[in-house]
Structures are given as structure tokens and as C-alpha cells.
Image (cartoon, rainbow, N blue to C red):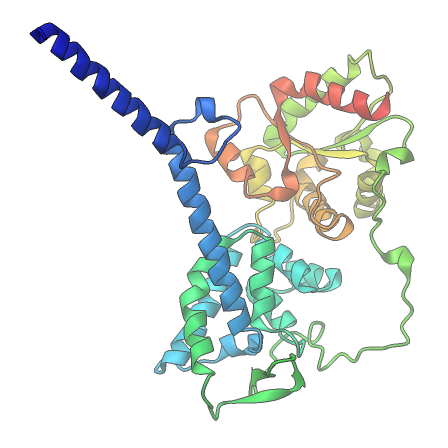
Length: 399
């Protein structure tokens, strides 16, 4: 056989070997719908990430079982000279820092843990102490407030970063209570496997309004259902035509004006009402909070205009300094946002049925990045897309 023919045979055999190897490699991966557009490296990475998440969930389930008999009081044990004392403090400090470091995370946690709306409102408006710490202290007044309930709440919130951060100190705590310790005692209630372990003589330093040991429960107190938030799913049935309630800071005024012009020019869906506080100035001055609440309830959709000024106004730890602005929409941004949070958490169970945010056409990257931290302000659309998208959205609901 000539040299050229030999080279062709070798090349053909090499190609066949490479093809067979590629087919065998591809069989390792799952059948993804978009496999034609995803590289093998991407598929492998997705599988690795999925496997890692599965292992994390498995570890969390195991950890939850280990701390289901430990009362939340335990993390308030202070003795930094001991290993258990350091672990308790590390767990508490990590929870407070990470929960308090995310806007309204403390409020979502409190809601899932069963803290009442009145208590959450009181913590927000009347307590100067750390809000995340207040939620944990209110929660731990329940004799069944075990640590596994906090872990379950964080799973529901998808805060795996917090769960991973407290995993090691919680393991140290759970291992410690496999042996007796004179600083702790078992409660009278049984979890089904072993008694709940709690801390002896831990002071309850909550304000009287939150302290259940001071304020007695009155079992005869009437349950006035009229005071509870409405849970009606089909809220649009209240209005024959849509009502939009705009809320914005001073730097959102140009976008608010544009939105009112867009709506005024709509032909396919007529009669849409746009409410702004400045346009209702004479009515609002009589009793601002009452009228704002009424407009909030009547509106089919609240439309926050997300600007840097708006985000600055709604920050969780913004000092309660009187706002003297003549722009009523700017002046009551924070008040309206509190109504949004209450509705999102308590009326709909963290389902957003009322808020549709708008980003101005000149929104900067920081604003776009920051809005992802506020689930109660999602979904959102750009000002440049508002005319087409919002009109189409309302047509599906009302026509």
C-alpha cells in the first residue's frame, strides 16, 4: 500500500475514534430541551451545581432534625470563653447581620415565623432596637419556638447563604447537647422524640407592648374579621375601569408625567384612571393617611417609579425625620411603601398581585441592581415599554 493511502486510513480511523468518544461522552449528560444551543461544559456545570444543591438540602434536612429539640433561647447564651458559648453567639450574630442586611428580610422572616402584623408594625415604627433581633425575641416567647423552625423559614425564603453560614455553629451546638449541661433544662413539652431544651432564667427585655409575659391574652376578645386584610383574589372586579396609583420620589416626576400622557392617549382601553397625590391635594390635606389608604385599596394596581431617590426614601433603617417636601407624592413615598409591604406579606401571602413597578428610561445600573432586593416591587418594566406592555396587560384583564 502506498504512503498516501496509509495516511488516509489512519486519518479515517482517528476520526471514527473521536466520533465514538464524543457520542459516549454525550450520553453522560441529561436530555436538556436546549441541548442544541448549550455546550457540553455548560451541561456538566449545571449537573455539578444541581448535585451540590442536592447535597446542601440533604445536609440542611439532617441539621434541622438535630436542632428540632433546641429552643431559640439557646442562641442567646453568652459565654465566649466556652466553645458552646462562642457557637451560640456566632449563630445569633450571623442571623442578625444577614437578615438585617437585606431590606425587609426581617419582616418576611417574622411573617413566616408567625409574628403578628401588629407586632411587625410596632417593631418597624416604634422600636429603635435591631429589627431582626426583635423578631427573634418575639418568636422565642413561644415555648415551641425551636431552631428548626428558623431553618425552615430560611429555606422558604431561599436564603441558602444564611443557612450555609450558620451550619457549622449549629452543628457545634447540637453536638454539645448530647451531654448534660447544668446551664440548661428541658421544657415540659415533648416534641415526640425528646423534650425541648431551653435556657434557664433568660431575661425578657422586650417592650411591654411585645412582651407576652406582661400583656395577658384575653380569650374572650372578639375576632373582628372586618379588621383583617382583604384576601380577595379577583380585586379588579371592584372597578369597572382600571385605576392606577402612581407613587414616586421627586426624581421620578418626569416619568410620572409621561405615564399620565401615555394613559391619556390610549384608545383601545378607555377610562383608565391615574391617581397621584399632587392631583388630589385638596382632598388629602384634610386627612392624608386616611385618603392614601383609601386610594391604595381602591386602586387595581400601585405603580412605583423606581429611582435612586425612591430607593433612598424606602430604606428600612431610614430615620423617621419629618418630610417637609411640597411634593405630596415624594412626601408620602415611605408611607405608601409600608402599605405595599403589609399588603404583600399579610393580604396575599407574599404573592404580588397589586404592584407593577416602572424603571425610568435613564435608570442607572445601581437602581437596576438594587430593585432585585425588593420582591414586593417586582415585576417591573421600563418606561420606554410601559405604553405597549401595560396597555396589552390591561386589555387581557378588562376586555
